[in-house]
Image (tube, rainbow, N blue to C red):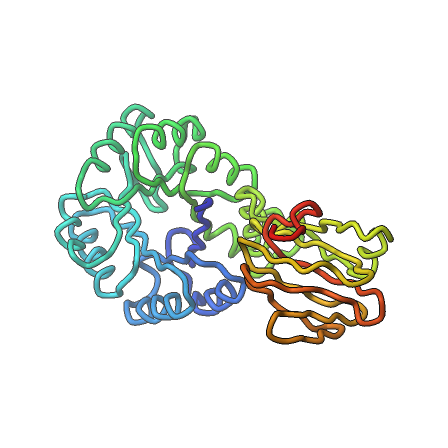
Length: 341
């Protein structure tokens, strides 16, 4: 799994009034991790947000920003009532664990000392690492929500130290508003990160300052870091066949997993053959093809294809002396296309 982008429907640690509109935008763009805070909207609206997130196929998050024990317990109970997938934040593990036990909610508390609103992270790196170790040693704590960019010290060093110290996933939060900072999160070993205010206020470096444009830019940058951008582009069959020689030698065009896409220009009837392993799909690009089996004969025209199962004998013959076919088969080479290959 790659680095996880969690879009927070929040500004300055509060769920925004127009969260539902931004949620619709995010789901249309394919954002799959979406969260909100436990303050800013009444619980019935938070429940509605949660339902929409899940109906859209995304994972829901609620991040606690409460500062006193009673409010944090109330927030944990709200998370259970709302039915979120993941509870982020809070520091009072002993109070929260009994509330979320058996609910299916994954719990990621804040390590370190959290103060103020908007929240900031205080203490030394060693102190925060010690807190992280103690929290993740507890059954029921599934990961950590590290307020990395709310820390006044060396943030990359903090993230790296915490990720190295624990075996559970660490989500990074707090003013991650550039592709460079996202890259630092990944390099440090973070499992994911949250962005809220930056996207809602058009602060992420992108030409389009709308929420849709901001999210699209973040998704693109995360895909690049995760190496989920395709280097492949469309191919033109007619142009590709132009590179196939008249000697009939197949030309491998591309590969899909363990399958090769091979271009073949057939001239004259081929020998009977079969393949011990792997089925073949034969697509006719130009011309017509007669495919003989031991029990019947099939005529395959332009734009049509036929699948030849492994172990079945067959013989190919172009209808008018020549035919261009696209062959999709496992490990097909000119040498293996012999009889019994």
